[in-house]
Every structure is written in C-alpha cells, then in structure tokens.
Image (cartoon, rainbow, N blue to C red; front, side):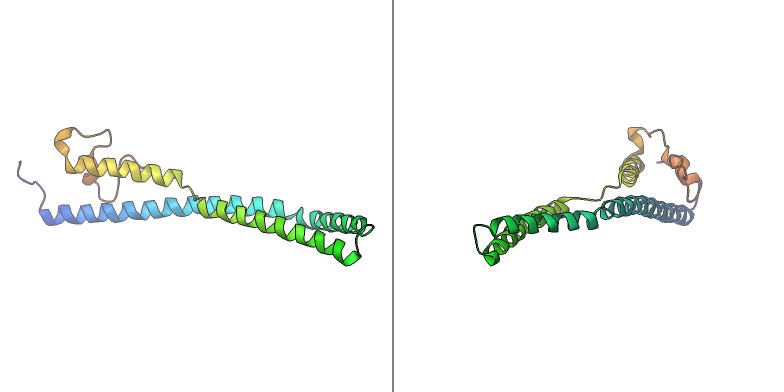
Length: 154
C-alpha cells in the first residue's frame, strides 16, 4: 500500500463532508420528487372532486325514482329501506376495495432510487479499488470536498 500523501485527519474530514453533502443532495431530490407528486395528486383530486356534486344529486334522484317505483308493489317504507340497504352494501364494498388498494400502493421516487443505486455502486468501488474504478472515479470524488463527478445539480 503506498504511503498516504494527505494526513488521515484531512482525508477523513473531506470524506465526512462529502457524505454530508451526498445525504443533503439525496434529501433535496426526494423532497422535490415528493412535492411534484403531491402537486400532481392534488390537481387530479381537485379535477375529480369537481364532478362530485352533480353526480351525487343525480344519484339521489335515481335512487328516489327506484324507491318510488318499488313502492307500487311494496309499502313505501320497505321500498326506501331496500334501496338504502343496497346502497349501503355497495358503498361499503367499494370503500373496502379502495382502502385495500391504497394500503398496497407506494409512493415511487424513481430519481432518488436511481441515485441511491449509483451511490451503492460508488461506495462498493471505494471499498475495492483493485476491481477497477467505474467511470465516476472515486479518487476524483475525494479530491474535491463535497462534490461527486457523476451528480449534476438540477
């Protein structure tokens, strides 16, 4: 092993600075991705919510018409009770299905995941420099505190 050209303390300090910067950049990237996803989700939710009042009014009128039709053959209280029961069962089934789907969904952060994968490769190259350094040479990354040659600010 060749003798160190830089005191160990300075090298450790630069490594810690680089890791702190790396973590800060990853958190900033995740924050930007989350903000974008939440903004898109909010816009989609607002668009979908705009149609709810007319839909609800039409649904109530349809249910009233069905209950009125059933009241020809049944007492009115039974006809409205049947329509209400069918709506409660259908609404409960739809709500259960939707809550299960939401419980299994994940928020994806593709850019952050890609950066973390590249960092793992970079760290593996730092641990084993004899295996050949990747295009983003670890030695070059340590020569400038707080910077990585393969990460470009956005």
